[in-house]
Image (tube, rainbow over all chains, first blue to last red; front, side):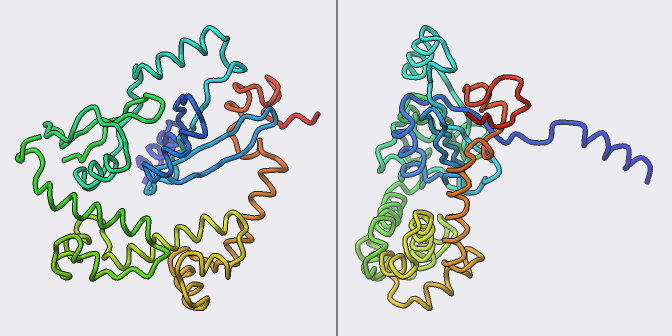
Length: 148
Length: 151
């Protein structure tokens, strides 16, 4: 059908997915441990770079086509002043990075709490579902939600 | 936290503790009856509750944890037989069959695949990274059309 063909062509020209996102972390090794051993994320790539940096990407276990880059705040990318300012902001908890969903927020909350993850909001019913907020080892915060 | 917000908190805590016990003792001979008793559940009630939350019975979950650990070890080029015994399997045959059923390839094939990937990463690390990120991080020269720079 001609109409469908046109729609398909249009759709192909649009952005279809997000595949990578950077999260600035204070210490890549510590972040690797937090995201894999505490959150249970999978490592997609862990590659040493020519200058000694590491390219580390992880993903939630059920979303393997979305890579979270554990990005160090290095001086090669930022000026010393910017790097220091960014580190201070991350540590301060200025960045709310995203929302993770869980099929059973109470079980996930109890497990992460038992593993030492810091929560700034315990699970609470909201109009869109039940939500808690936790921080990663650097200070970035995330919403953990069981959506309705 | 009020009970209205957080239903059956004691049940969740016991089930999560049981799951964490499996996560940390997967190499041992785990008696799931004992876990149920430790968690103050009858065996069948425990299995049903566990499956409600994690989508798997405790036994199925234990197998999955062992296979995931096996995948991690194989990625470090640990020999298949060492992996098998390290994760609590007693028979190489049943380990291989289960591994293939869950992962889709045999442990040996998985080990070879990941050894090759590791070699490729060591040889051409920038081939595994979107060029824009490599450029931004200074790993390749700007306007190089994302080709790896050979020194």
